[in-house]
Length: 466
Image (tube, rainbow, N blue to C red):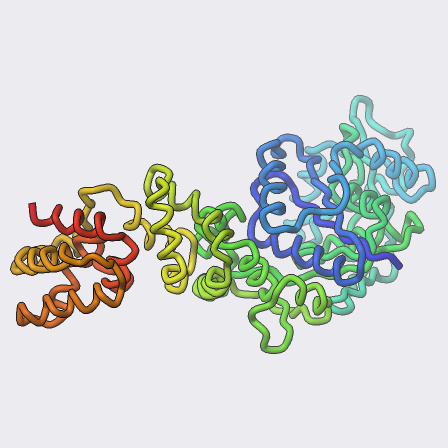
């Protein structure tokens, strides 16, 4: 059997973390089995579906490297096919027309609630003569669901799920305006697309039971179902924005790398022994659904930060420079010039060792391209008071006499200045750091002098003496 999975987001919002993980699991399972992952945009909700959301879904998948195989499918474009199947069920006596008005349905639910009964549809038009239909009431088409026995789904993650047929009502397949419901559209699309495995969140588990009934009544083979647990916040509560339930693009803007995001999402509910750092190639080779847990995964931002830091340290200089460029331009408010880019190239290997995101790296590297006179952080400004100007003047004089601007010579010179002034090195290094970077923290002061070069270093120190 050919493995064909699908990712089927609704374009009513951006691609969020939970959706991205679902796409990843579908993509990996298909790749592991040499199959395909198809993309279907479930855009039948015309009031809420937007072109912007569709574009954002494609953008997010493209950034993560999880684009589907072949052309994306629009569910809305297939509404005639969905209606065709509903009519086929109707003609076979496996569905029927229901002429209940909205007011009748509301009253039916009110009475059921008052009497402690199920509030589902009571089947009043199931066996009624259509000749009794009231004039002017457009009917819906409902599935003639089985009343006896049970419906069973053998879920590849959740195990065997059984629901008594008496607990379910006759669901609507086609609305009064002729549009299909989600339940019908999904089944028809999955069948026509030859989907072999439906991998999605476990909030769809009850839908699988209802959808299985449509498969059975159409005499269609049902796909294998795998319902993966949802992602919760670090406190165990339902995922929200405060937990990190942001659009995928927001994580890109915050400076995370796509390979780090995929690695992190992979480990939210799936495991391979104690392995934490898992490359795409390894993930494809190892991914199977039997390693997906049943418990909800917890989103842990510090863990993502650490994982992203690992991948950031592994980046080659050219790709790092390309990825950092927009973040650095955003931090500076302009593009760095050629001289500043040369300083960045010199400093990046050391700076990336200490950074966990591209945004953090841009902030750390910002001093290399800062315009003079430097804007001072409050902590840095305090370091330039008291005896600091006198010490900086000594350092400026000594450094001005250096011809070879090498780290070893710079270190020896600065240490000699501190010794001659009768102070510990830190007493001089701290105001020098403030003068050279405008910050209270930075790489080692000798490295900073080296990165900035002779002219810029002396100029920045002189700015603090004027």
